[in-house]
Image 1 (cartoon, rainbow, N blue to C red):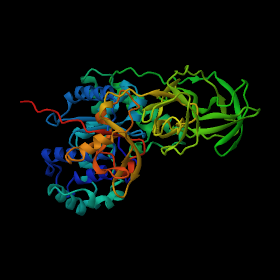
Image 2: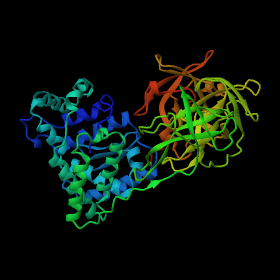
Image 3: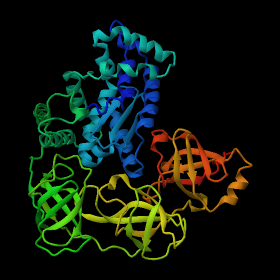
Length: 538
């Protein structure tokens, strides 16, 4: 399997495969094991700058545990392997020289355990057998600039000067022999580790369904592979020859019983629809289309948009927010309207009764109960769980009142994965429980991108006056703590120091966490006093 997403985004990866090889006239052994591992380390740093890892410790532990079991059978045990799950919405899995193997979190969640193991073993073999290096050595037409790049690597130069070579290296493909070897040896690694090797075949079935849903076009990461049906046939023969039982492809049609009507007309982000059940203004319904379930195992109706009733007269009128799911469904006349059961909302400390603000900016807010200035609140609404099997209440955004009770001003930020349920009317507001509250100063309320500055709103001005005398102290800028399982360290996007305490409290950014930049900073990000460094053990 190979990564192939936005060419600009993954320039460093493709360049790496070039740099990892020498000129066609230089044998593969010219790239020593030490150089290969050093190359992988530097490339891994670049990858994590572009695409950070997930914060799901359980998933990271699982991929490492499984990976360490699989590599017991590799040919080059002197390589230390590293296994990553990246925050990526594409269906990606890839490896780079030097013992680094990556999954996107989307692919990780779509696949089941045996399927993950099969794909992981396949990628380990690509790395163990130096397939990327060999592929580049066979690219005769690139021999001159490959030699130049290899020299640059050994001189410890940076990658920036080779970005323009991206489209030339984008055509790099593993040979069918390499892919077949990765399948065969990958199956052996699975069996040696006590795992069921048929998972790779089951994963291929899902990829083929994914292709069929998109009109036969494979995911970009599989564009360099043999056609998926051909691989399925080959893998089937491989496992039959090994005596491995192959589960039948048992696809079911699973009907959704909660259909109440259909779309009668579409006008931009508004629809008219019929309903067999009475609905009130503010009621939430869901538009669904035919497709595969989240794991690509059964046919069913999948949610494609959230609709909020704005007119209770028949036919009903509603505002529509499309779902961020990558399915080729369009909203049109006849699209089904569904009302699956939703969990009972919690009481919270109030709710947003009206909102006439631009998301992320200070605006007007009416609360069902008084909330103090700079009280940290989470906005909760009904959303789908990650595999779209049921509705649940979750944190869809972050709300911080910035004025007194009479002003009702606030700053807010919607959670990216719940773009279809933004901070808006009828959001239930709950207090945020943050173990790092004592170090919290306030939210970002304005951004000066050209000057690399952020404005802080806080009630702790006296504390800042005291800190101004100590230029060595710094602040952390972090995304909101809307996921209680996410560790503080994984939320930090950058560091800052105090720049001005005049009419406004302004901080200057001094650094960024890998994968983040000034362009990513948003209003309502949190500003904390940086925690003290850990004490050194004597």
